[in-house]
Amino acid sequence: MRRRLYYCDHHEMGLPPGHKFPARKYRLLRELLEQENSFEFVAAEPAPLDAITRVHDRGYVESFVDGSIPHATMRRIGFPWSEGLVRRTLGSVGGTLAAAMDALESGWGGNLAGGTHHACRSDGAGFCVFNDIAVAVLSMRECRSIRRVAVLDLDVHQGDGTARIFEDDDMVLTVSVHNRNNFPFRKQPGKIDVGLPDGTGDSEYLEAVDKVLARTLEFKPEMLYYQSGVDSLAEDRLGRMSLTQAGLAGRDHRVFAASKAAGIPVAVTLGGGYAEPIELTAEAHANTFRCALEVFG
Image (cartoon, rainbow, N blue to C red):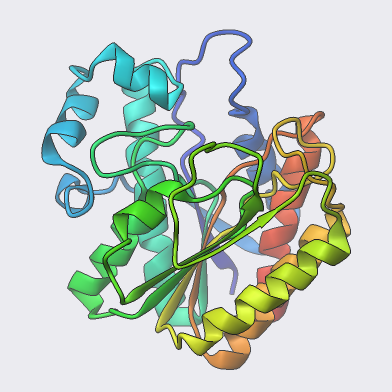
């Protein structure tokens, strides 16, 4: 039986030529994994707006969907508005909702998008429109009574939006290991934050991950949301860190092995990655899902 992975890369975002967002990586990732015949690929259903408005202000959500959103708001997000972007954004959130349901049923689930951790309640930033992880957390709380959860964010950029959304929620542990000198330049304190210096390599990074994993397990979450960004790769043009492919794979193995040993279901979202060439980012993302399959079966 092949594991399901959800995608939304078939929706065109309408980006202008030369735009710095690496939209091509999503299809590259899916094509890499398709060659291995270990996964079933499912086009993600759009997330229902009622699920999104559990997290985000209704006016913000509706203005984005209908195109009346102010240009200044879209400029902060970093994308031009388009109907394709709306479809893709709703699919990205829907993929995380579906991956979370798969995780509860079989130990882990994966979305080949998502991890949009800079989005706050009433606006977005850093290529993030809606916070898919926050939407999934509150949706699972509503429909499956999963209350005690951890968000483990290992993107090179701090998960400020997620931290802000759950700052007063003691049942959600927000954990971020990131580059301390990188975007966002004004960090939002989470429950556990580890800021690492420029040039951090594999050994220092994995030591930090080991420490936060131990503290995460002490929280005894009923579910783990893993933002598995790979922009700490040495070749990443926005990362400022020096991890290797082997280091990132070691990180993923630690997360999955610890979660499985503790009996904690894991929903995996993609997060960032901006390497040159972008094929290196796609390979690093692919390794995350290969590792999940290896650990969980």
